[in-house]
Amino acid sequence: MGSISVVIPCLDDAVMLRACLAAVAAQRRPADEVIVVDNGSRDDSVAVAVAAGARVVVEPRRGIWPATAAGFDAAHGAILARLDADSVPPEDWLERVERRMAAADAPTAVTGPGHFYGGTRATRWIARRLYIGGYFWAVGLMLGHPPLFGSNYALRADAWRNLREIVHRDRADLHDDLDLAWWLQPGMTVAYEPSLLVDVSARPFDSWSALGRRLRMAFHTLAVEWREWPPLTRRAERRDAAAEDQAVA
Image: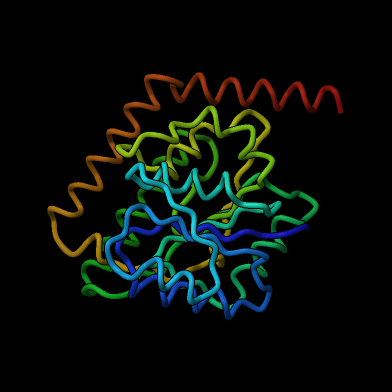
């Protein structure tokens, strides 16, 4: 399958980053490199990353998309495996990623859900059933394939090289995973694997105001994508390209 780079954007998240990096270090299939993208941390995040043996990339432009893009650009692996600083993958996470990406029907990207920890039972239910569950269902209908979940996905590096100048990588006001999934080009595929689980903090859902901010950003991202590549046009172009490929085959 080739090498795997794990990319983790981080901003002032030293405590959770330490747990994330410990889980990455415990993988049965070791990462070939681990990149932590520091997005302007003022806590001990960089020291935590260095102590864990990660390579630190500095991205001064604030925002999850600029940080993610900087990590992808710096990575050397054939597969770019993406986690958030509060993600805690099980020990077989990279093993599962590698197996799926090496299958006969290998996709361009693979993603899975999150098992939320922390918060309350109510916030964990909202996070999994309404926010993430609704995201996979509703956006999947629009895209015609599963979207990507930013805390838990992997992407082929050659696909990133094709996409890096197409996506809105410099925009901090957009959800990076949704933007990347939207701009996957005809012929690029996503596999959703329910068993590809990672633990993810439920802290963004600890208050209605925090949940509201995430939802507003989600609808704003959808509005941007809708204007630039409407869902019906997008699906038609992908369908036509698939038909052409089948005709050639």
